[in-house]
Image (cartoon, rainbow, N blue to C red; front, side, top):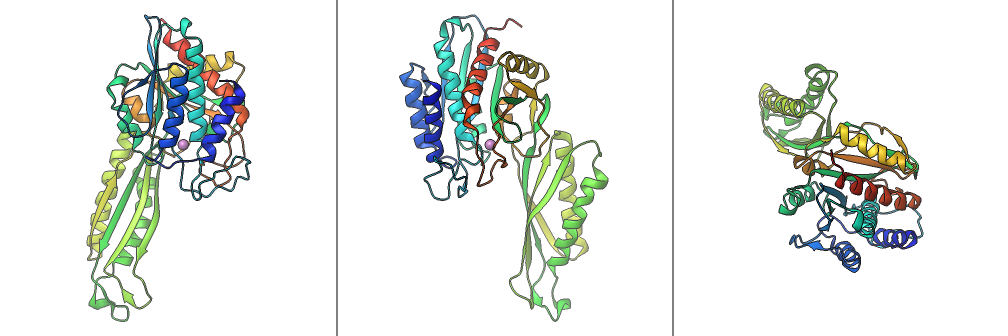
Length: 375
Ligand code: NI
C-alpha cells in the first residue's frame, strides 16, 4: 500500500464511523487488507476487532502493537471533504487514524519480513470508548506471550512530525459512580413532614471535594467530579430521592482505593446526618496507563532516528483501556502529533493526514527493532 492508498483507507474509515461493538465494516476492511497482503489473521472469534500475526525467522521477541477502532456518538462539524456520512457518529478521537496507522505498520513489517526475527502481533481493538474492548481482547490466548506492547494515540497539541513519549503514568484510571440519596417526600411548604434528600446530596457534593483538598496527599493527582445532579421535578414538592453521578480519576492504585473508601464513608455518614439513607455504586474503569521507562527510551531513539521531534506530552486525567495490555507485559502509549486545533472528542476534531504515513513507519520500525533486540 502506498502513502496515498493508506491515506485513502483512513479517509474511508473516517466517512463511515462505527460506534463501540458495531465495528463490523471497519473489521472487514482491515481483514481484507491484511489478507490481501498475506498476513494471517488469528481466529479470535471476536465479533468485531481482530489480531494479525507476523512471524519472523526466529529467535526473537514477541512484540504487540495495538490500535482501537471505534467512533463516538458526535455530530461531525469538521468541514472536511471526507467528513462522516453517518448522522450522529464521528471519529472524533482519531481511532480511524490509529486503525490506518497500525494497518500501515503491519504492511510495512510484512514487506520487511525477511529482516524480522521475532514475532509481531497487531491488535485492532473494538470498543475503547466504552472501556470494554481492551479487557476482552487482552484475554485472548494469542497475546499471552507478548513481551512488549505499544500503542499510538492522536494528539492535537503537537503538530505532525512530533511524537509524545513520556515514562510513568500517562492516562488515568477512570472510575464512575452513582449515588442515590433517599429521604421522604413531602409538601415543600411543610418540609418537617418529610426528609429532604436535596440538602443531604448538596452537602455530599461539597464535602466530597475535601477528600481531594484535605485527605489526599497533595503530590498525588486525583480528580473527583460530580457531573450529574438530579432531584425532584417541580417547585413545591420535596422529592423522595436525589441522584448523583460522577467520576474519580487517579494515577495511583493506592490513592484510587483510599478515595473510593472515603467517598463511600462520606456518602453513608452525610446521608445519616440528614436523616436520609444512601447507597453508592461504582463502575470500576481500567487501570491507569503507566509507561515503561526503558521502553520509552527505546521508542524515543527510534523516533529520533526517523527524524521525529520527541517531546513529553501534558499530563491528563482522561482514561484509556490500553492498560489492559500492560497487565500482560510492559509497554508504551505514545502520542502522535496530529495538530488540528481541536481536542479529542470535539465535533471539529481533525487529524493531520501528513502524520499518518510517518507514524505507520515509526511503529513498524519500533516493532521490528524490538522484535529483533537481544536485550
Ligand atoms: Ni481515543
